[in-house]
Image 1 (cartoon, rainbow, N blue to C red):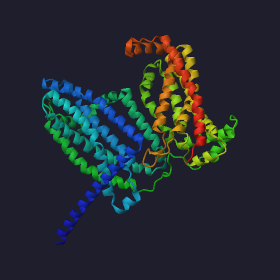
Image 2: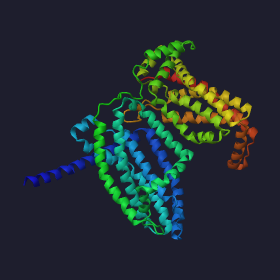
Image 3: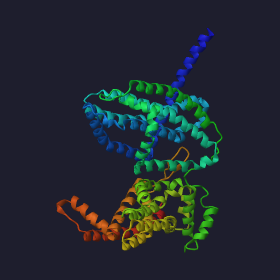
Image 4: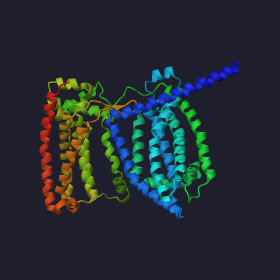
Amino acid sequence: MSSAGETKSSRDGALPAIAISAVIAKTELRRAARKIRDQDVWLALLAVGVLGFVVVSPLAFDAARDVGASLAAGDDGALTHAPLAAAATWVFLAAFMVVSGVGSYGEVDNADGMLTIRPPKDVAGGLFLSSLAQYIPWIAYPVAVVYAGLSVGARTPLPFAGGVAAGAVVLLSSCAVGYPVGLFLKGVFRRSETLSRLKPVLGVAAGAIYFWLMFSGEFVTVAQTIEPAVLASPLGWLDDLALLTTPGTSASPLAAVGAVSLAAVLFPVGVLATVRAARYAWYVDRAEDNGAQATEPEDAGTAPAGRLGRLLSTVCRRQGTAGVAAVTLVRAYRAPMQSLFVAVPLLFAFPLFEQLLTSGSLPWYAPWLVVFYGAWAAGAASPLNVLGNQGATLPTLLTARSDGRTAVRGTVLAAVLLVAPLTTLGAAWTATTAGVPRAEAVAVTVAAPVGVVAGSVLAAGFGALFPRFESIDVTASRSAVLPSKAAFGLFSLLLTVGQVGAVFTASLTARRIGSVLLSERLPFGLTPSASTLESVGWFLVVLVLAAVPVAYLVAARRIDSYRL
């Protein structure tokens, strides 16, 4: 009797545990959705990802339709890289799950309270389910597009069955492997002070490698190198499962059953491993300082800023300007996450880096990209949110004896000191490497520091008009205050106009290319000549340069009149 009662009690206790995990998963999904809605940067990133899927969808559909038609005609040669595609999807999902476990999706919201009232298995199960659910759309949509094309080409809906089964197996098995590995790595990082400090650096390095593989085309080379080893592993069975119901293929039913069976074994093992890894990650005395965030340090104006301010006062007429510049530089050093986002555009420069490494040359427009990026980075790093970046020191700034002009000059000085030398050297070096004419090389070298100063002042004007004080969560323990969308958009637009004008003014190659492109696209048969574009360029340059003093006055007066 007691044995039967214990069995019934254990079953009754298991059901609430599963239900609690489901409730926690639902709560985590709502938290993630609220984070995306409330923090526009993450919303923009999500929109970019969705846009990428939308753009690629017609191409994927057409390619899959052609493959389906070839299979219907008895030609299976189009399936050469299908096994590699299925295995690569699994590897990518597993890698993203590792990142989820290491990052904020491996953290417990209100951990002290949650882990007190519920055991770790319930909480870990909820986080596991929420991470799994978040990737369902990213698998379901590509599967639907690709297999819709296959079905249309093969003129039968049968391929969908294998596609749905393969998608489910890939998602469940990759999550079962990747997520507990991520949680385990989180525990390793928390137990090591050195690894805790290096975690942001390692994350940036991993992201840079990922984008380099994507944008440089090296992913195909790497995939072809590891293809034999991958296909010899159980990952090769995914191809048989994905094409099992597609007519005209030679998929192995035995391998397909093996893929399903392996997923059926991996999933419960992965759940148990998640619970063990969660205990390892959550129950630990952290070696890192959890209070370190990318927001304004309260002691930003103490000893380091004072010493730097005295050094800068030797080149500044006003002590207040040197003090603001010193505080801005110290803030950038202590809170690097605050300005880390300005490095994001460098990811799109990987093709240029690859060309430089392979051929030792650069295209003619590379120096101008350096000038534009330097001016944009100098403005976006700090001046573009000149008020919002002050954080807890904003009341001190507004009540100080120094006026708004001092604040603007100090913020601009800090940006120029950091960015102008690097931009000037980079522009001169890329101009030499690209082999542009000497006159254009001189123009690029002169435009670099001018662009940095102008960009910083323009950014201060827009940042003072459209400040932003709300922070976004970069990771579970780090936040950053980024510029507002209005300031960011208007500043980037005006800077682009000035850059186009400068290129048309100094580069004959740009004027010739622009003349051809505009003649093809302008209405009423308009055909602007190279000399006309040079005049337009001068007009745009003068227009943007005229906006610089206006932006300076607007920023100074806005700071003087700002009230909390």
